[in-house]
Image 1 (tube, rainbow, N blue to C red):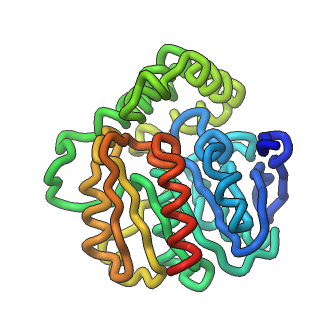
Image 2: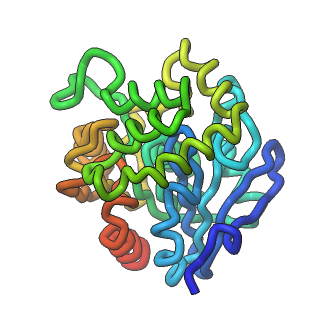
Image 3: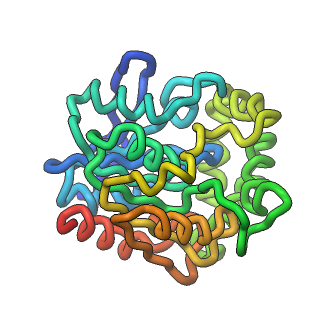
Amino acid sequence: MALTKADAARTVQTRDWKLRYYEAGSGHPVILLHGSGPGATGWSNFSGNIESLAEHFHVYAVDMPGWGDSDACTVDRLDHVDAAIQFMDALGIDRAAFVGNSMGGQTSLRLAVQHPDRISHLVTMGPPVTMAPKLFGPGDGPSEGLKVLIQAYLDASPENMRRLVEIMVYDKARFATPELCAARSEAALARPDHLANYVAGLPHGAPVPTWVRPEDLPGIKAPSLFVHGRDDRVVSFEHSLALVANVPDSRLVLLNRCGHWAMIEHAEEFNRLVIDFVRNT
């Protein structure tokens, strides 16, 4: 029987946060961190991955503070690295592999820098990193995809969610279905506090946790796998080129016909990559 959202859902109280997470499997801990889009959750980002990964690992997909069914969080308190460490401590997890998409990838990178003893493997999909000069991405501000993401926070209607999902993926006909767009809109509108807190942070730049500093990347010791879509219109694949050029024990998989959601658009291949990497590296 397929794993359901209700079967996997759990809640934990950490020192500062009440967090929703989704759990399955046993063995080495693997923590999945979602991106920053409105309506993003551990389940919405990783429902196509949790069950396969749980055949080999103890999987936790977390709704981070400010997203999903976890506590609301104003931008001044937004520290997902600390929240991840609190989550691990509350569940008695000493060390885990971290798998992060976009904002979740940025959190995982910073955690690898700040808490190297708590991370065994680092896997990212499309995290933004600060670099100069830009070779392929736009140089005039937020990317096309980030502009659409911000508009969806300002108005989380099904139509704006359709625009958001379409820019997140390469295969629009397959993934930008009316059902998915309506579900993402409903999930976002169910937490107006999350939307309002994100919008309140916009004057200070995209309200995501502090970016990892480029000079810290060579100090990352965890074996690292960077997965990126060649057709990513939210965060150009040049960001992962910068990562693989600077993180010593790293490798890059660049997927053609793939946008910002590699774990969704290429779920089977992504699952194989992560399973092999965590088991054999």
